[in-house]
Image (cartoon, rainbow, N blue to C red; front, side, top):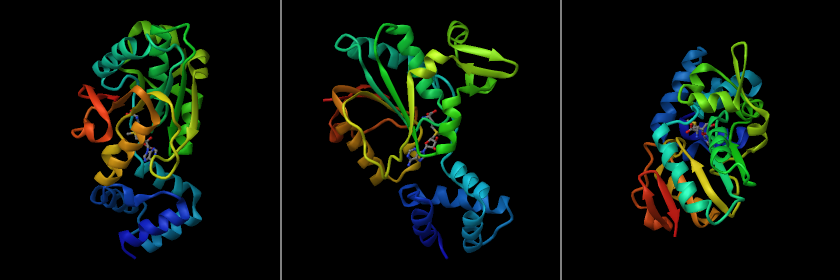
Amino acid sequence: MDFDDFNKWAFKELGINLEAYKQEQLNRRITSLMSRVGIKDLNEYKKALLSDEDQKQKFLDFITINVTEFFRNTELFKELESNIKKDLLPKNNKLKIWSAACSIGCEPYSIAMIMQEISPTGKHSIIATDIDSTILKKAKEGVFGEADIKNVQKNILDKYFIKEDKKIIVNKNIRSMVTFKKHDLIVDKYEKDFDLIVCRNVVIYFKNDVKKVIFQRFNESLKKGGLLFVGATESIYNYKEYGFEKVSTFIYKKV
Ligand SMILES: C[S@@+](CC[C@H](N)C(=O)[O-])C[C@H]1O[C@@H](n2cnc3c(N)ncnc32)[C@H](O)[C@@H]1O
């Protein structure tokens, strides 16, 4: 069995479309994961994934790389905040926001805190999605560690987090602003009418043709004038092709 066959099998049995991810990087990750558990052959690995739920979860976690933190690239979040104030809030106090590929929730909670700061009386909704149901469960709980909050300013920390022993918990009000849902950016339908889509540090793992489709679909999911905020290594060169204008290196507006 080669990686192509393995990808087909994984789609059928595990529902994850590995063909959409950059193959070299992905194959290196699978090989490294197999060697960690002492398996040399994809066939044998397939059997292990089917018979051992724990192994299967480790595989999905490892493939989908969950690294995140609150206010990741702080200066870019400042830029986002100023564009929300300037472009979105003057027209609407019920913004519909999507944090796509949200991992354990640092990103949508950061956005909820920004909205609470700049528009406390607004009725904004934040949908946060990820392909990985285990991390979504963790995200809903809102419990974090020191490393996750290293970019959080003291006043925000005091206002929106509760400290219990070593646990740092996002307060109930902020948690209630975010709805978590399972969603695969490659195979699932996209909701419409968003004012803001935040999708950071996931499309870098996808092949170019897949990335193109995703940007196109984000454009269709936004309202006219809506914003797309991407990761610090993911600026879109041919943004016009997808119907965007450039607001800044990492923020695009639907024309
Ligand atoms: C590196 S994290 C990014 C988290 C957050 N957006 C940030 O920038 O801090 C990548 C996330 O993408 C998710 N992911 C990977 N493939 C996905 C897919 N096809 N659809 C939705 N989410 C996916 C992973 O589960 C992981 O939580």
